[in-house]
Image 1 (cartoon, rainbow, N blue to C red):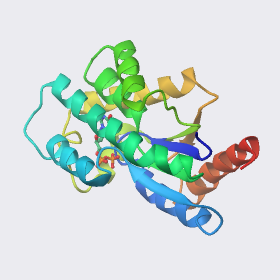
Image 2: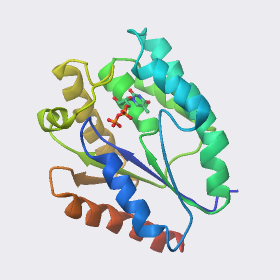
Image 3: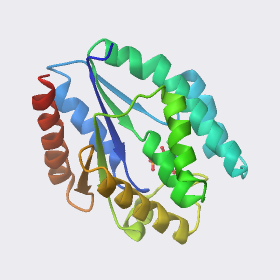
Image 4: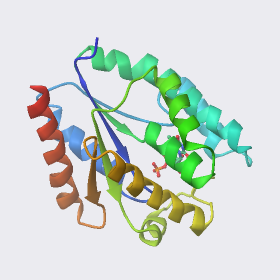
Length: 205
Ligand code: TYD
């Protein structure tokens, strides 16, 4: 049984998602249980998979995909679902849409198949709300300070990723909210909080 709310944050590199997630958590944790989490890398298993994914050698795209999916399956069943069952607000920095976008639009793997693998990994869990923090590719890349294996991909790869997020958001407007990440944090925070509060209102939470 799910009684909590599952909100995911997506976007290209350097969009400022992690700062936004922390600020939102601070805004709500006095009034409800808030779980801040991320993919890849939550929990001990996630941390090990994250090292393989982001610090390792070049990976075959299918091997990379299954590592992201393994992280997601473990994260959803061991961390996200239990928190939702307790009624928590779960704020997750990247989730299944990153797979469709990075491995699909970015690496060129079949997107319909990726959606099916995502549904398999999450056992059908989908976010109640997904906030896309959008920044132009060059602006985002210029903000990256600690580069990982995916940040180091070509400019063309990152352009496909940004475009992919915009296409996904436009295709499912009831779930996605687009926020301009080039604005000052305070403005980004107000827009994201507005979307979350509309969700509270519709969910009666
Ligand atoms: P991270 O340091 O968490 O990036 P960011 O701060 O930009 O969120 O690194 C995660 C990287 O993994 C990021 O480049 C996006 C990529 N990724 C995928 O390619 N597929 C996925 O399914 C997920 C969750 C992330």
